[in-house]
Image (cartoon, rainbow, N blue to C red; front, side):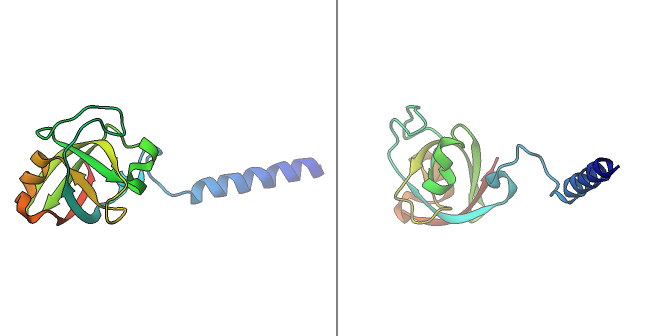
Length: 129
């Protein structure tokens, strides 16, 4: 009888913890869950940390190390916004020199969709596309 009571209590507690779990897709990463704010700069692409070769006219991005997350975001698309302009870019590289964890380094073509390259650095928001 005692083991039945222990089993019933264990099952009840397991069910309660499942009910208290936050809702959401198990495949949703932090990047998908919210918009990020940071700085955007541009760079001359080449062979990126994800292993793909890219050029100045490709719509690509390098994420700051914390957002790059060891390569788990390679190949994902993000949309970067600045002053009513946006650019959809593919994550192909890591940016260890980005000024904050939410900053992004863009190809010249992608940066040009947001602002003049003469600006060099602009405030942006971005999220998974």
